[in-house]
Image: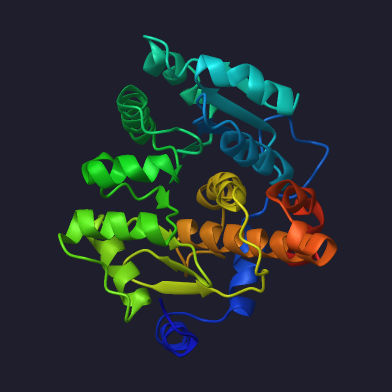
Length: 315
């Protein structure tokens, strides 16, 4: 993979350190006030959840709520809906993704949604992927921020044009998903000697989308600059952590693109949101690991969102 000296070079060449970025994240967070009405701080939609995968959309949707969204919608297949509902009464679950008129059913809700997370638990069924593609097209037409993760990235690797050049899109690949995307856009294997530069090249090839390459240190780039999030996490790598990241990023993307004022102008809204979500996920991991050690699961990390958020962004 990559070494710390290489990442240190990227950090100094491309972007300032973490201490200069945390204030930018703080500047996009809407203040809590009794004068707001339900929905103002975020109505987030998750596109995903099928018979085999019900945990991922739940993790993404509940993380969005705990970060501070007011409402979380999950658009999943019929056989996943009851299972996801049983995990939590907090979520609004729509069992429409495998229906004949799935795209129209989701499209009815798009005017009410502030951002979309596409992919958690989606699976690779051709029909579901086609539906997801059409939903992405409808969302782009409305200018909705779109986070693409997991099987949503499989779709993008098959058809990069689905999201190419859409400036409110954020891709969140792990290394395997990143390699697939790189090979799809460059027609050659991924170059690992300078992974920051390689991430930059992928972003450029995708029309300067924001790419978050998850790893030992998270590399965030929009094709013109690179941020490295090396906030301390833990050595525990249980399934579901990426869903916590994508769900929290869905909320932060809405906040960042909606933020008034010039505070975040020096860095793109998508980059600020991505850095915030990466730092938060790592802080949750660190706190949960401190309590549970080897037995840490994503459910334990989700319990830490409130205190981790406070420590990073409100202390």
